[in-house]
Image 1 (cartoon, helix red, strand yellow):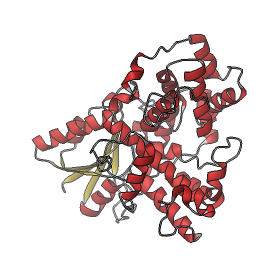
Image 2 (cartoon, rainbow, N blue to C red):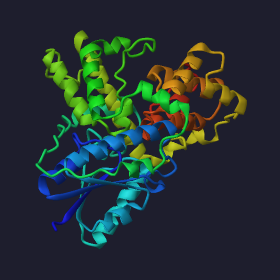
Image 3 (cartoon, rainbow, N blue to C red):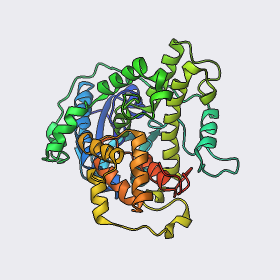
Image 4 (tube, rainbow, N blue to C red):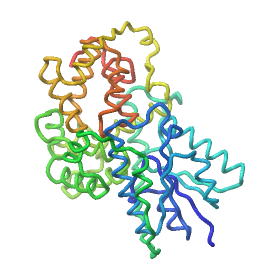
Length: 411
């Protein structure tokens, strides 16, 4: 029997633009995939109820797609090292882990493979640039977005997405029961609401992107802050589980801008100085820059998921009012925009970004409730829960984090 190469899936639940998978299919004959759902991978941040359903749906689709390519997907709650070594691999490949617990798990796996002289390779797949390559002139990580984004753009054009080789392997069976056995889907009417709002999968992500590029991106800079209209991409749930990769998105936006004759020599570096018609394209790419900034901070300051980045905020006199917090969670504060946002979250697992800023500001600056409480509630209820973006957003709103607003600024 041919040697087995293992591809470890964690964030990127997709086949398209998955560098580790593409390399395995190009270079090796026998390929298997593993996905581990455990505290080892997530640490204290196991996916919340909304995202557990979303992961469940994407694992089913991923397993079926891999089976068509002749790749068996093993889904388990066992140890990552035990799962990988149990397959007796000759090589192990994965895309770079980005969250603190997943990075620790990757380091443990690396040590185990080295001890046994098993080859392994790590690929950049879920960020546009190496987070260690973008530094200040002093060599330290950035803590302010604008200079970070300037350096990000100066780092050059992101690597293009990779297509998955469609080799003539015989299809295999996919054990969908292993996904269902994870118990990720709650027996709750809320799940039916989520199904009504969101369609999972790579194809759905691509369709969402196509629709945004065709109908909304040109006016994005003017409509992005208006929660009552469809002015944003709504791609965040797909990026959160890696159903679509940022490199694919970046390339498609640039392709659309060039097709409209809007991507000149200085695009997207022109940013707000771009021509009027190009501002929507450049502005939306800047949002991908914010995603990169969030992971830049999370990787270099992993403690900030529950501790303030600015150390002077550790002694801030927060006041925990359980009744006020419960009314905020349920959208019963009496403030219409706050309540509308929180009810939208409870109904759909999603909230417009501008409204997220408003409800976070209200919780931390009007109710004086710790930002960590709001971050945990968002984590449990957002279908697009992303540890980097969630941490960045809440610390930004509270005033305790990177590039944060002054505490006296109220949305």
